[in-house]
Image 1: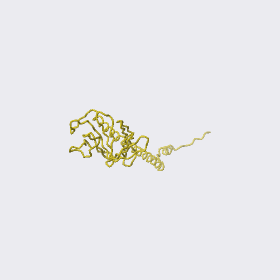
Image 2: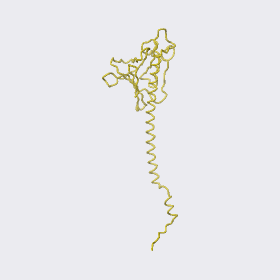
Image 3: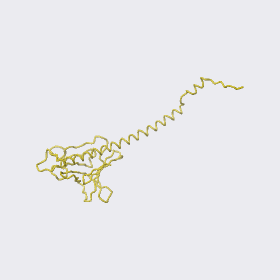
Image 4: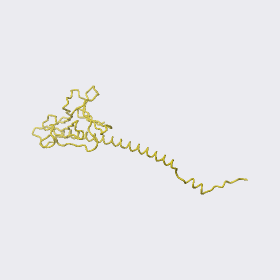
Length: 205
């Protein structure tokens, strides 16, 4: 004869629906905290990379703007008769949060160094409103992969040549391969680099 086990239905349902213990809850919350920390950290790093790339693209676009203005013959209001349309950008290693867009009014491929206004060659001083900054100005020579630092950098385009005149108050040798502008965050990383070649070619890495 079979024996049947009498089960207390209420107690069985209670055990089934009792939920989590404090230990289980603590383990789940710990795992959630770790995963949240990883996600927040990676998101911050990803956003920093995006912001650095965006600033590098903005600087590169402004260089292209100067090149197009020169090649199209855009006339500067302060230019004298006989002026060859020439535009460029000026970067100062001590001014990491801004750079200058200028018209080379005397066609000497140098920025006159005066502040905007009052007959200066400066057309616009572009301020960097985000946390990123211009952290390095360098040149790289043919056959030597090690960059050399610059105190400043001028890149100028003069009609009808599409090439770039790369000048600095720091002497630049004749075997120049390209100029290098480094964009970074205040903590140093991540970074993006803009390569300016004498031919007028621009690369953003």
